[in-house]
Amino acid sequence: MSEQSHATTGTYLRIAGVLVIITFIEVGVFYVPVFQAALVPILLVLSAVKFTLVVMFYMHLKFDNRFFAFLFGGPLLLGLAVVVSLLFIFYGTVRLRTGS
Amino acid sequence: MRYDTDTHAAAVAHGHATFMGLDNRKMAFWAFIGSECLLFGSLISTYLVYKGRSLVGPYPHEILNIPFTSFSTFDLLMSSLAMVLALAAVQRGDMKQGKLWLLVTALLGLVFLGGQFWEFSHFVHEGLGLTTNLFGSTFFVLTGTHGAHVTVGVIWLLTLWIQALRGKLGPANAMTVEITGLYWHFVDVVWIVIFTVVYLIQ
Image (cartoon, rainbow over all chains, first blue to last red; front, side):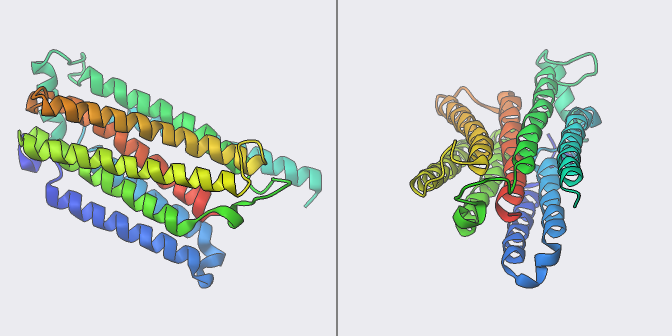
């Protein structure tokens, strides 16, 4: 297997560095009061970036057959839809009951 | 040559190719990982739906230890790095490095599990059990299920390491290491989500 066919060791190390830096930023954002207003969207975006980097480079989805991306991405989107739907259903119901 | 072309050629050579030319073991494992997305999606949904609805304490902000969990997150991220280095070493036939990185991955997994055991023990000591409140029930089920996955991963990695020590693992079995890696990285990405949703967004 040629080295050019997928990520090299250098790429793996750089990705690890980026993942650690993002984790530091996440924890920093958690503790800095000025970010509290936008804490949830910031943390969700940072988490999504980390998730994508691991899946694309460490799980080789960026270099692998697109069918694997379909096998993973389909249920992942379905899972996300379940999370979002349940939150809307539950909190929508609570809002209707409380009238707030 | 692309990564998928290489792996397809290997799949055909070893008689594991599907009619699409893909390795059937890898295809089955990606389908399994897809089903795991739904499992963890349901557990995370349950945690979020019951978030902030506990009638008695301890509450998340009183008990969650962010610095400690940040270290656990760092540990699991480094284990993912060790896993890709193990796979790269096995693929190029460097079994000395392959054995080393497989062991490092397993040990980092054990460190994570030790941390989780300490965290759970601390929570129980502080009065948070599985049936104490909604936070306790959803927290222990979600993180406990993840911990069970890490445990399976560590056993799997140690099995591969022993196989490598006995000379039964080489470049010809690189797909076995790759599939183990897929599982291990998936456990890592699930923790990335749990760390954000459970620990940081309180």
